[in-house]
Amino acid sequence: MSNKEISEAKFWLQRLSKTSLRALHILGITGAGGGILLGVAKADWSIYWYMAMTTGSLLMAWEVVRDWRWLIQLKGVLTIVKIGLLALFIPLANYKPELLITIVLLSVVVSHGPAGLRHFSVIHGKRIDGKKEIKG
Image 1 (cartoon, rainbow, N blue to C red):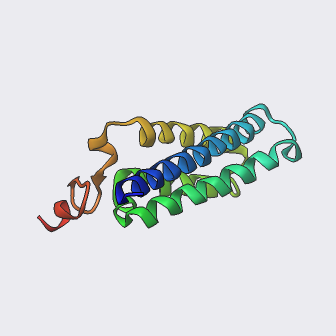
Image 2 (cartoon, helix red, strand yellow):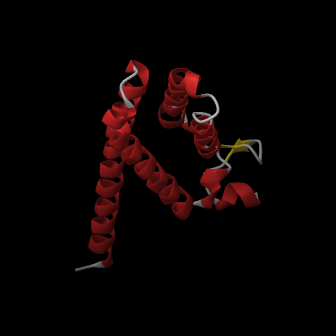
Image 3 (cartoon, rainbow, N blue to C red):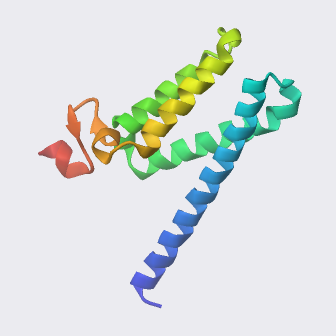
């Protein structure tokens, strides 16, 4: 087996793993979000909450390990803002639906916004995709 085949196999394994993790994350968000928005008893949706928090943490760790620059790009910064909004669920418990809606809308920007926006570095004031943009 050549190096190219091993690397292609590794690519597909990573791609399928991340896609599966993302699918479980969306399922968790859907279940927890439905419970929050519809005022369902927490016990009925808490498993989805734990699924969303676990998979979200794993996806975030995946991005940081892959490339630390994710933390200074708008996609990483907005993800950290979403975590801050989640933390507000405790002191602002009466506003969970509004906070959740804000988090979901930010998620759309992070996931589906143009690359120039998602890859914009809040430190450098420009789009960065790799080391050469930081050094140059």
